Length: 304
Image 1 (cartoon, rainbow, N blue to C red):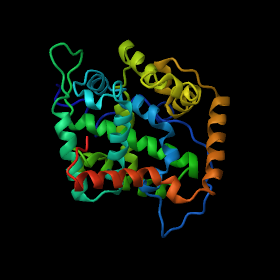
Image 2: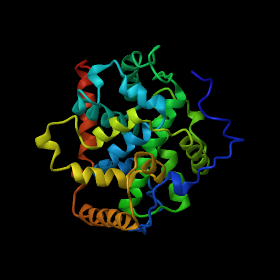
Image 3: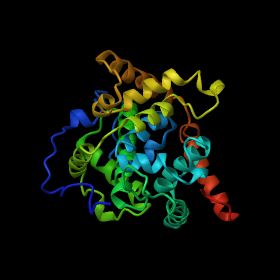
Image 4: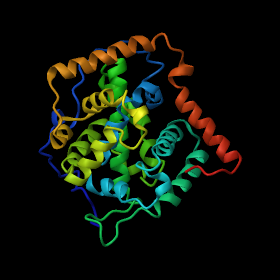
């Protein structure tokens, strides 16, 4: 494996710019900001935020090393293809414990993930070299998770001010540091993160093998047809909407300005519905994941 996947961020000048690496959101703020309650990553655990989950997987797998680490994984129990529901549970639980858990709970979850990750590494037949413990690969995955949460939060609540965006960003640090990423590796400011993201996006390459895998993912080929058929078209629309132009182009996905407006109008409607839903429903999934984790820890049951 290379000593570093990315060039020196202090001297790198990416050719890609934000209009190519981020989705365009024009939604105006729908709530009055309360200075005593700044926007935090915990607010993004609203279950509507997971509408972009498939798109986020696509973004993570934009780096070939992450893609082949998933596609070639020898850990069948955590396979997205063979055990999609379990993989969904463990991923959602990771997000919940990273944002809502205690340091002790994060440590215990990290230990469980490490046990699985020991088997995720390239071999002589792999087209690229990878290792699940590589901090740069973990940082890229965490960056994608942050992008997904920030996009969905702004679609639901409106575009944040620079000050709000900075506070939101700083609260998202555990998305990376819950595993092997050191605190110093998370870009210090929101502006520095934008630079990191544009540099990182220059490594995005989706080859034919990965493209086929991702299309099967978006079409929910891994679950029962009776369950997936009613949702396939909606999921493809949501996934395409959450993907930056760079990704849409590599996957050959068409997206027009009319599509973008329909996408934002959908979330405008969702935000109105949200006003009438109690927090116990909107955040119930993440809270349930934490209860399940604590039950597993208490009774010494497998986490992963």
